[in-house]
Image (cartoon, rainbow, N blue to C red; front, side, top):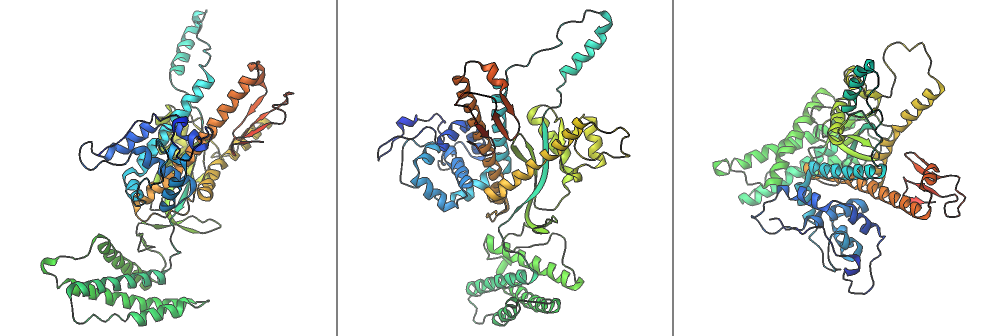
Length: 530
């Protein structure tokens, strides 16, 4: 059942602190709490909940804020609750009216929150954040000057003027869209055929023990578990293993696993009405180990190391090997995500557990861009794999430029020095999305997804991208306040505006003789002043 109070929170001065004192208004959690659209995010969270049925649920701001804190600080579920329990600023961020030393909820609730939200909910929150930034940009820039609105004086130009009006009515392409794909690695051990067979054998032995106790049999089926364990360790502990030894050990483990699966079916036949006594998790393992045996037997007979829909973890059977050909690892294990980036804000357009060709994402990402902003991008910055002939024709029909080598013979006319500089700059700007992947993997553990289920893993990935967008939003907020400070300090606003030079990386104040701005540089990527 829905239980929510509006995001209208008490002022900082009225936040009750039992140990005295007051909260500082420029704390990062307080600043971020004022930027987020809590009511809109709550409506997304409550979409799958009933208004009348069920027990009252936790406040939406409480659970969404806890998810943000968890991924922003890279905490575990238990440590997130403990840290919130000790930090009054985080409690204010969650919408509480006063400090409390009690846990806000049990850490196990995080699993149900991830199941309830999903990637679509997090993407809607991201779209709302982008809309906020768009409104702020329009407010700062003001209304654009309307040029060419006067009627033409000559009758001969009326036809051209009508065509210009039609072109102006259609939205022009704006902005630069960067796109790329990466893998959000699941936090699993590196899979080998021998390890998979050993894990499956041990799990099958656990199921046999369960059925033996449930059926109350007198004699337990013979599984040779001690001998099978000994055979596995003899090879696993060897430093150097050759192909012949590995293949021989795999053959033995296949025989042990096959024996265990036959015992399981014989024991299940003793139940009446063909009922299965396994719970949901046990039944899942029962199906997975049979599929692992089938795949491993197929690869053993063909003497190959690949098969369709290959399982690399019996605990997470949805994870697939993704061949990427990177220097660090040729194969990664996790979800492949297609991401688009504009002005530092990223969106997940495609999330798939199967390997796919990312060139199929280009048209989808451009359409998502058009849906969000109301126009197509002016420039698409992507890898060579995206620039297929079909995609080039599709982009050309919509007057969208691309970076990359054009098809056909090189043009006879050489580029000017300005065109060469512009081309090099646009090609280098594509690295921004690589930096976004680095931020996610190094800063927020995008390469260590610890969730076990498929839906919770997808929510985990989407939550990381939401947090990175919130970090970007807070930096833009600091940047806007920095400009407000300068406007309040200097009277000549027009002169001050001419002293700024803005690009995607930093804002430098040049030529100002005032001691307040001498040598002052604001690094937007770091969010601090030097």
